[in-house]
Amino acid sequence: MRQVQISEGDHIRGRPDADIVIIEYGDFQCPYCARAHPTLAGLQQQYGERIALVYRHLPLSMHPYAETAAEAAEAAAAQGKFWDMHDTLFEHQAQMAPAQLPLLAQQLGLDGARFDQDLAQRRHRERIRQQAAQAKSLGASGTPSFFINGERYQGDSDRASLTAAVERRL
Image (cartoon, rainbow, N blue to C red; front, top):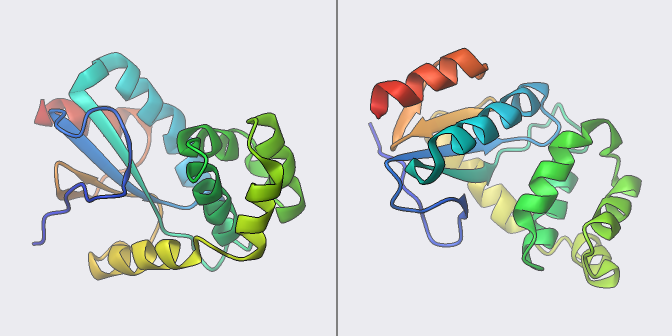
């Protein structure tokens, strides 16, 4: 089984050398990813520097706004605000239509013209597609798909299951 490691250009919340590294392949329009979002934040708050979170894109075709939302997150990343947009997209999942994205960018204080241009030119599309292809090559076809310290996590994305998985590895 292939180990999944942090790679250059990953979006990392926490220290790359943390005791526990959770890599998530997610979809901003996925209700299960939205359910896992506060759990992951809570785990990081609970364990502090012992946990690092990595987010990679796996927009599913059944979610019509997922790829555009991923592109919005990358456009925000180009301005140093990936995690701000990541959190905002999950917190405002019902407002994810493409017409809403510039409003979210504005709320985050992004350069609106640059953000809009990134989306219009689909500047980050290839990165998203590469991450999705990588996820599929690892056997991750649904979201969220987690890898904890390099190994595929097969459990549920609820608080109790993820907490138990982290505690087993600490």
